[in-house]
Amino acid sequence: MPGVRTTHVQAATSVALAWTFFVADDFDVKSLRIEFDAAPTTSENIVVSLDSGQGAGYDVPLRTFDPIGITSYVVENLKGFNNGDKVLVSYANTDLNAITGTAVVEEV
Figure 1 (cartoon, rainbow, N blue to C red):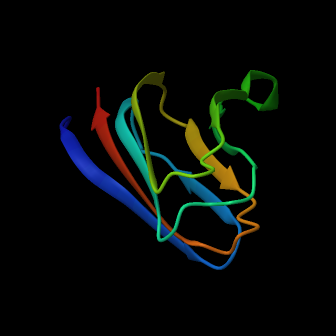
Figure 2: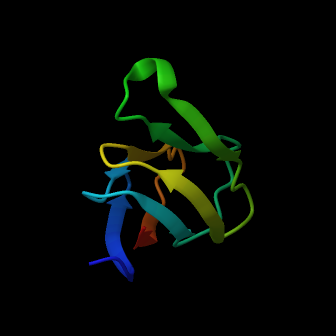
Figure 3: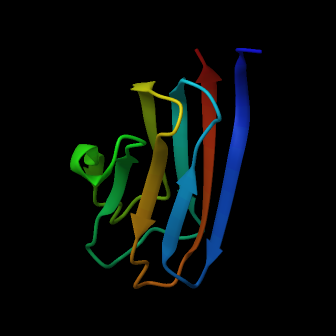
């Protein structure tokens, strides 16, 4: 049944972040929160991407940001994911921080 829910939580401690999440229906990402135990000091990007259910030719980066100097970052209102699509979140984590990611999605 469609609705808003916190559906995916990912933690990475002292390793690279490679997080994939999806919903078995069409969905929107209401919010995606990335939190660090300490602000990163190495400049490198977190990349949020669409892994399209239609194939690699449809994969696209959705957001790219460098979290240097911050401990929390929120992406809001990523819309239009189809059944079979996945959201990928990746980050090298050279500083070896503990990272927590939380996604709130809405099936549509």
